[in-house]
Length: 309
Image (tube, rainbow, N blue to C red; front, side, top):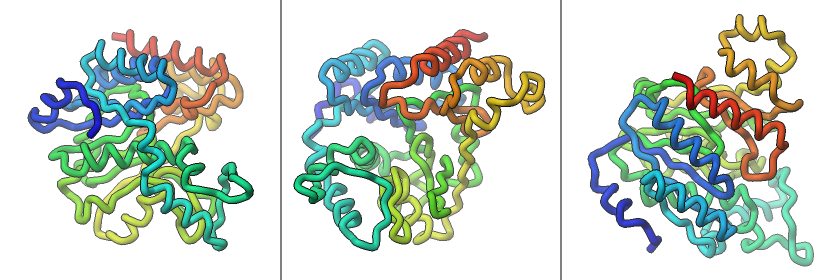
């Protein structure tokens, strides 16, 4: 069984709250901002659990230390679990099917893809940890569960509970290269009490009509098999849609002074996204080394938002 801090064991006995999952790999500084911004802007009573999937021991310790400093319950996802996750064999079976169209270029040994190779791929590793969180801390929770990317940050006050009043499942819309629509994992919120067959709701990579897609694609099959479940998908709004506009036009669109400054400070292309009517900012690709100007612009923006009265 996973090694969990004593305060997490105590934590699980508390009364129901909205439960946020944050999946951390290599950006401990992002976790610090995410935690503080959640506390500043989420209007509901909530709790945060961090799933520490760092491969580098130094980063694992850094993430753990931030959790300890801020009294954030955290779960260490042991690295050997990636190799034994059954999703690897499932994905291997899909990718070996000659009918499968896949954009992923995965390394192979002597020309043959293996489950072990799949277990090393960052996108699939992410799927492993998300499913672990759902199995152990999500499906049986008696309140709303929220999946967050490690580089997703709230920007304005909002109530998750209010967002789910008319639908038990909301998230970010991803439109695949063949027009297939599914819920994308930077932000997904659902109320497990309001679902049939709740354990069939998964968010791993999957094939849709023989087209292989990234994390979240499995939600397509749940929604197809449970057509009476109401849900809502929010569009992905890219900074590129606004980059060329003047400050005056951006003001007319309702963007704040800080949001406009961020857009103007970003390099081209900035490659950040805004979700749910500009309530969340997604850094995008935070697990890989980023453009230093982009990183500086986003972190400066987060500081301004965090310190603003």
